[in-house]
Amino acid sequence: MAVALANDTGRSPLDVLDDFRSLYFDTALSSSPAALPTLLAFARPGHVLFGSDWPFAPAPAPAGQYFASGLDTGVDPGTLAAVNHTNAEALFPRLGGTPLPAPPARLRHAARRAAARLVFKLVQPGTS
Image (tube, rainbow, N blue to C red):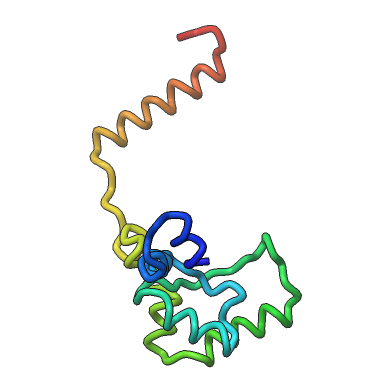
């Protein structure tokens, strides 16, 4: 694929492969003993995240267990922690362990007023 894209774009196949390495990958159906080490060797550090194809490709339970156990038993604990949560927290820092600050009081007050006006309009149609 890299050679075909390189031919179409006039870029070096190595540059195309480097672009591919910068993508983010999930572990859905790729944590077998053959695929996972290859994926981890190819992807840039921090670019492999836990993932599942459920519900779009619901595999039979034994297949899901096979791939899940490949992830749990096929990598060292540091890599497992990175794939399971650290890489995602780095990609989406606001979804990490630090809670978002509460909105300012005036914003909360304005939201409550807007909600009250909406409820009033629903209860008393035709009024503004």
